[in-house]
Image 1 (cartoon, rainbow, N blue to C red):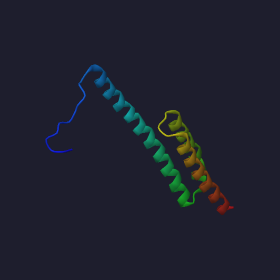
Image 2 (image 1 turned 90 degrees about the horizontal axis):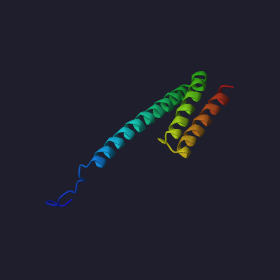
Image 3 (image 1 turned 120 degrees about the vertical axis):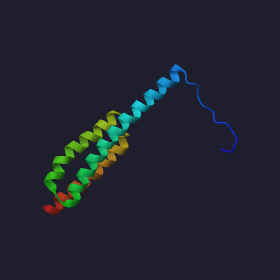
Image 4 (image 1 turned 135 degrees about the vertical axis):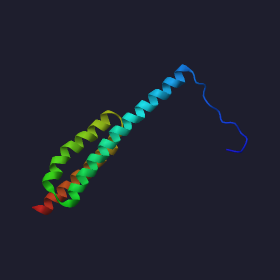
Length: 100
């Protein structure tokens, strides 16, 4: 913005304050769910890169469950979560094929 111009602020009415509280609460929930999904995906990817088939198979169901929860809570879109699941499944199947 140019120097000297004023910045418009919303009035601090009850509804605006409530909206601020709601958006902060939703952001915290979304952050928590996104963190859970990213952590589970990271764990599964480390198991896959390490070549640990048994651990990767155990983590697969938990990871897919976390992704489905993120879809239900609208943290992730369905296409994004399904893309993650597809890629992880392909990597797991490739690892199984290599071991066999």
